[in-house]
Image (cartoon, rainbow, N blue to C red; front, side):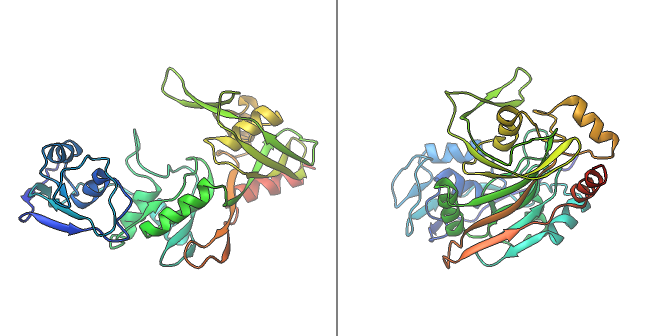
Length: 321
């Protein structure tokens, strides 16, 4: 068991908020600025008035503005935070999977099987892996999310200003997302726009499930058939909205053809059949992102090639015709 040495930060620090730091909550700024300090302690020093903004007391929810002067008191700061374990396979995939990058953001080809960020039961994810291989990057934050078993285009901001603008594009449905999926069974239609509101729920075991409900949030997905196989259908799915598990639930519920390999909303027998063919993941790939560049305003299209395993399965299905 390793111990973390502690040292006191210098005297009182007065930090002027820059454009890159503005429009974030005070607690989030302090958590980043005082790495290694427990959140409970950060909330305590704000509550006691030891942290001040422009010489006044504020709440942790206060949103910082450019030019604000934040008084940060001396605190116990970890000299060396515990290192997260990021496997070589993930590191290699991230280093080789950069699809686009400039000073504002990057698009990576996310490998399947990894959560986008660490959480309960997960030591590290995609964003932790990126920060590990780029220790000198001052800012790396996820713009959106992909499911653990989904591969493909994932946006990561390198500046807070870019993060804010990209969040606005996603919120206003100005990012065109195209996925490639393999559906179980033969879907005979050529095209269908699914409008089915979705609601999230937690099972007794704590698993997140999403289902179609009139009480849910608006969700729209355009499905277009690419090719029919003997016992499956290759489709393109373009979600207009970005609800949790949207494509997976719409495919299973509204089309009646779940995604091959989907352990949560799929068909056990179908998944078992495809596993016997050597296919052991969900066939859902974020193939393309199209949006206006947050700095230049130019229309940008970024595409991620199909992983080898998905390509191999399509070849197998074509031979079965």
